[in-house]
Image 1 (cartoon, one colour):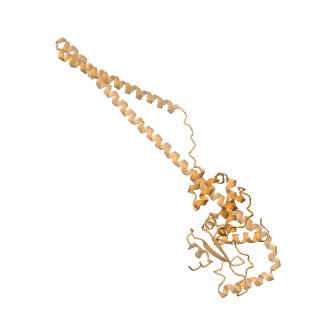
Image 2 (cartoon, rainbow, N blue to C red; image 1 turned 90 degrees about the vertical axis):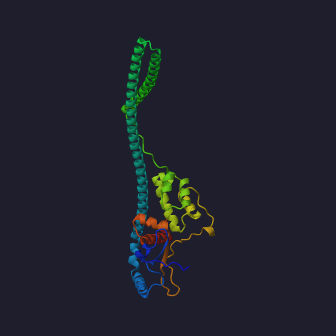
Length: 342
């Protein structure tokens, strides 16, 4: 399988899907080039820059210092942008939870109204049935009187049975009527009480972690073991910084060395003095020194930097291009190499 060609322009990088890594070629001055086998025009431009660099060596040394501050500010801005994006995601999750609670409350009100309407209809039906039973009882009593005067014992017995059934039905209907009236009284009393403020149901840290995109399963499991890194803003900021350092050191996300670095930076474990195992060697190495030269031409070669999908996502959230993010990684490596950044 041929080795992927390093990319030099934003247009080339944008063609690569976000879930795939990209390799970017940077020349020593930070300009993106196609590869160290660039065309003759790029090589001539590089030689001209090297000549100007030798001529203006002293003035450039003077402006190195403020440039270092700008690089640190840029890195801090990236971390701040990531923190804001994280807080916005939490706010959106809480807003969805509040919206869900509001809909539940509205549904409860509608259900209550439906129950009230059904209760009123049942109460009216009971009143009508009680009226009919009373009419039946009065009719039976009149029939008893008429049959008694006529000495019709059979008619008297039939009227007595009708009267007994009507009175029994009236007793049952009265019980139902009283039960509905008591229920209405309780609901009226409850309506007079001030509503209790129930806070909207918040997401648990585990639920929030499950909704976070672009996380490997191992990263998700590790975060669930340290949920305080999600709930505490300051600790979350430290985690983002440790993550950026681990990526800069070349530790692939999800590897043991990646988690070891983060845990040491956050104080979960003491630094390990043992040597790095071969199986844990990072796939993406830290940017090489700017002093590397081509054995054929003796000129400085392009610096190749591979950005993982996670690093590309960080660049997108920070509002900068992958090329600028790669330059920041190069500058950070140079600062560390020169002892300017601990």
